[in-house]
Image 1 (tube, rainbow, N blue to C red):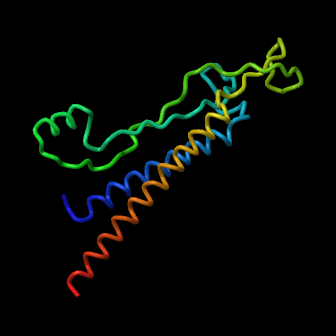
Image 2: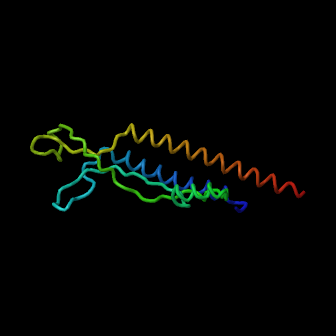
Image 3: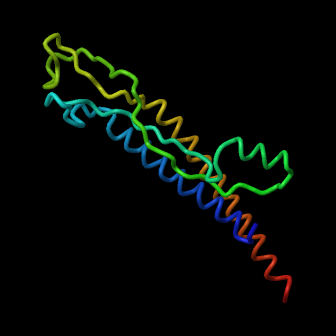
Length: 151
């Protein structure tokens, strides 16, 4: 464990949370987008909600369990973004016969983005970001105090 280990761990979490906030913002921005991409038949498809999958840089739970059982007591090295996937829940059908994307029955396929869910995820991600900023500042403060010991 190096002197900057805690700062690197907090930095990786800050980067991951920043990326998650960008994806959530994109989901909110496209909550009403009915023409996001063209499928293989040439028809427009609504925007699909994006989900961020985050994982530990060290690996899986097995490695942490083995480390704990061997009592090596090595801390983690942070997190990373594993992948961004699309939410496969069905699109919402809204009756709006005047919409240009309405089908012959008058229904429009709307994106599967729930703004309430996105706001909850955004608040959770923001709190995690703030907690990591606090941890980073605490690490920085400890390093600054340790530099004053030699004076």
